[in-house]
Image (cartoon, rainbow, N blue to C red; front, side):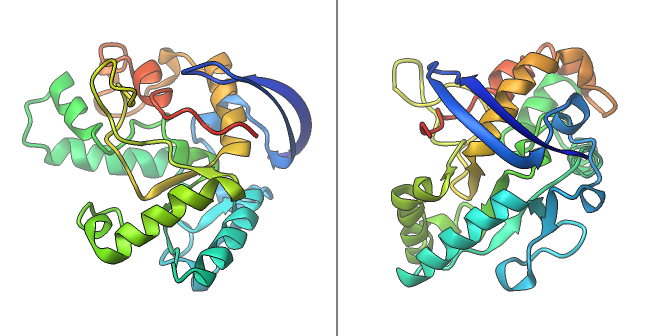
Amino acid sequence: MKRFIISVAVLFLLPAVLVAQEIVGAAEPVKEFLLGKTHFEKDTNFVEIAPAYTVLRRPNNFIQKRTLEAFLKMREAALEDGVKLTATSASRNFWVQRYIWEQKWRKSSVAAGPGRARAILKYNSMCGTSRHHWGTELDFNSPKLEYWNTPDGIKTYRWLCENAHKYGFYQPYTAKGAPGSGLRETGYNEEKWHWSYFPLANIYMQKYRELITEKDLCGFLGEKYVTDLNIIEDYVFGVATPPAI
């Protein structure tokens, strides 16, 4: 996939904030890329995370170059404060996401239907809707809720909340609450481990809004519930407002 240089004004959602951004040397946000139909090992915008920084192995250890550069700077700063960040999840293309989704679909004890999809959607994305498709997302240390209640997990999360934005990262899936609570009202459950490189992800969010429709979300078990569950609005865009650049 070719590299591109583009200057755009990105209209953020929930609430709307106009921010001028410049992206240099990143994956072009065409429809196929946004849907995750990318072979990362063939895309020169993606590189492997070295074993010293991740538990992942090829082909699951790819990330966009700019995301990796920012992560390594953040990781070094965290180490100086006694916090170790290890990548436990990076980029996942459409086909990997389909495998994960369909495994959960087949094993679910919930009756087939929108309820089954909704149960899986607490923490897992439908194919073509995951931010992990874009090479901008990293999960750190552990996806287990229990870890984030340990002293190490609490210290790590506090450090990320106070410092991640300095390196271009933010937590898209913050706590959820009822209308009027000031918290996210839709989307996945809170994920303290999931951090997004927003200088790139913000652009991809806007292009997703422009290019992707519900008809594009197909080719997996449960696809017929995309419309019923308002997947694009409630899940793709059901994120915390990213910081201004």
